[in-house]
Amino acid sequence: MAKEEVRIDKWMWATRIFKTRTIATEACKKGRISIDNVTVKPSRTVKVGDIIQVRKPPVTYSFRVIALAENRMGAKLVPGYLENVTTPDQYELLELTKIGGFVKRQKGLGRPTKRDAREMKRFTEEEFYDDGFDFDFDFEESDE
Image (cartoon, rainbow, N blue to C red; front, side, top):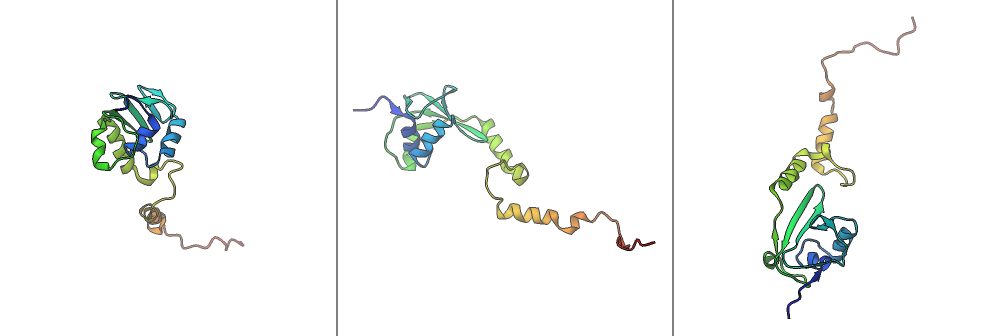
């Protein structure tokens, strides 16, 4: 007997959108999950044909429910349960943030990577401060 409805947090965990059901539940509670542009609670049920929007800043992913599942599945089975209908402009936004690097780092994204640290160090080295002036006088010798 096939189910007609499944809790949204359970379905997102089963289709591997989130690693754990707890994370899926928290995303719902924080207002990051919506169906038809209406934020939903973790207990909201999904039906075949629903389009679910998942906000993982800076991108909003969209998925169409093809089939229902309550149990976690292997990654190869996921395409039979959901269809990714995310618009191309969302992926462009993701690329722009990747290109932006550490200069556009948002608060809360954690520590800079080793690459970011090297770039910052290179930027603060003396060669960048050399603006062509040669100061040969001593500032402390002003007793006159």
